[in-house]
Length: 79
Image (tube, rainbow, N blue to C red; front, side, top):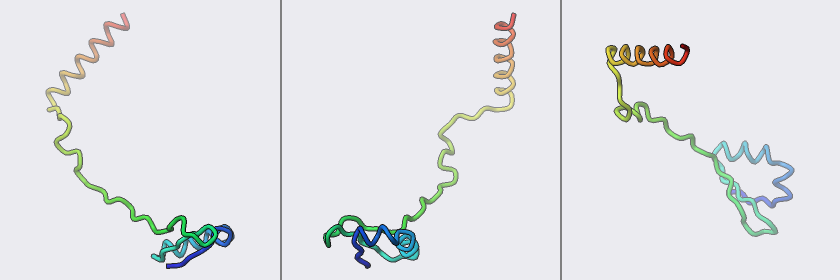
């Protein structure tokens, strides 16, 4: 853990970010009183198939029926 005052942190922010990314915990203080903690962020885990089963699926025949219904709507509007 490293304690750095705000004034000092302003001048070396990029260096502090590199140290935090490397795993070091940085505490930024105002007048010697700790204010914030700078730690690396762990990326969220991806969940493959998260939405599986949540939405209805159409068969080929249902898609064809749907396409025909949409085509009829457009024909009615365009006439």
